Every structure is written in C-alpha cells, then in structure tokens.
Length: 300
Image (cartoon, rainbow, N blue to C red):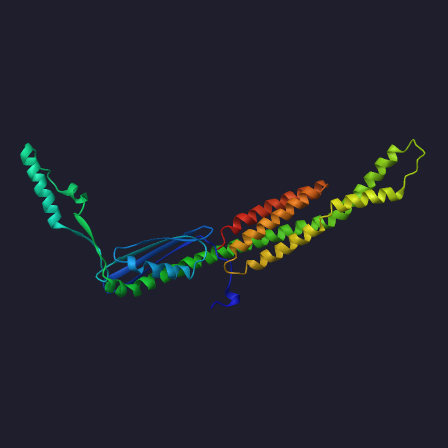
C-alpha cells in the first residue's frame, strides 16, 4: 500500500518501454498513454500470447485508473509458441488447378507462386501451446511491469509540473477573490454617493427635502442585489479543495468537477456586479478557471 506522503497527481500522458530475456527468448513491451475520461486499453501482442492478454491487462489496470493506454507486447524465441505455417497440401492443390486451367487454355504459368499465398487455407494460424504461454509469462510479466514503471515515472514528472502550475493559478485566483471582497464595500459607498448627487441635482430647484431613510433603503436594496459574499466564500472553499486534491494520486474527476463549480460561482459574481473593476477581475478569474479545467483534464 502506498504511503500518504508518496501520493501525488499523475498525468494521463506518458510512455515507457522495457525488455526481458531468458536464453534465446525475448519479450519487448512499449506503452503510451493519452487523455481519456475512462480507462481503455488497446493491446497488441505477438502470436501465441493471446491467452495471456487478460493477465497483461490486469497488470496495467492495477497501476492506471484513467486514460487511453496503447500497449504492444512482442515476444520472440523458442519459448514462444503459435504463429503461422504454410499448408503445402492446400498450396499444391491450388497449383494443380492453376496448371490444368493454364494447359486447357494455352496460357503461361506465372513465374512465382507469391500471389497464391493470399488464397484461403494456404497460410494457416497455428494454435498456441498453453504450456508454452505459461513458460513465457514470467518474461512478459517482468517486461510489462518494467515498462509501466517507466510510464509511471513520466506521468509523475508531468503530473508534478501540472500540479505546480495549477497551484500557481489557484493562488492567482485567490488574489483576485480577495481584491473583489475588499472592493465590494467601496462599490456600495460609491453607489450611495452617486445616488445622493443625482437626487440632490434633481431636487436643487425644489423645496422638497431629501429623506435620508429613502436613500438608505435604496442603498440597502442595491447592496443586497449585488452581494457576492457567499459566492466569494464558495470560490475560496473550492480553491482550497482543489489545492488539497493535487496531493492525491488520481484526483482528475474531482478536479474537473471543481473547475466547473468555480466557473459557476464566477458567472454568478459577474451577473451581480455593477462595478467595472470587479467585472474585469471576474474576466481574469474565468480565464484562469478555464486554464485549470484544461489542465485538470490531463490528470488521472
């Protein structure tokens, strides 16, 4: 079991290769991964290894949870069974028919029999020997494990780089959130001052006094409609969760969900804001959230 201190976000992209040999038998493995919402394995193996494919897939599944993985396993040597053989009897039958056909019509026979190799039954698959597959399994297991080790190292390196960039982006968003929070009271005061100036201008040539209570109610209404305190609190909470998840090994789905929630809160703030400075800050926040979302889609 992995220690908590060893966990970190893994990228879904990477590659690895390895080989294992015993005597004259060799198994070579290449693996590469790309982004994918679920785990999907595309496995190609040499003739005679078909019976081992479920075990090969199980080895990969233990280490890879998300992404599309392409795996090639090539085995050669006396430990590998199966393959293809030439059915001489079937080829001879085709040649006899061809000679008879050519003789009846006075045609020349082709100088080579290459074209006949593609006819049904000429080249036949040889069933793999189960015992031979079992004998080669230790080499396959060793090579696949070593290739996945290399794949994991690359995924960890890229995951560490992505995590560092995302933490920086989260910090930038947090700074903008703090700026908006400090700006909100100033916006309400500025609105109150503009309202007083406007009303005073309208009533400048009238004896009607300005009721302070009416102004206070109007200011309270606009302050309530533009209050984004809850949205800012949720934004900070989501950012804290996002940063914590980057210390997990496979947080990709949760990060993607949080990026969507961050975008939802930013949209709500934008719809409530009457201030140009806050509106510009929200645009910056949404740009950074989109960057987080794109990066999170590469995390396993």
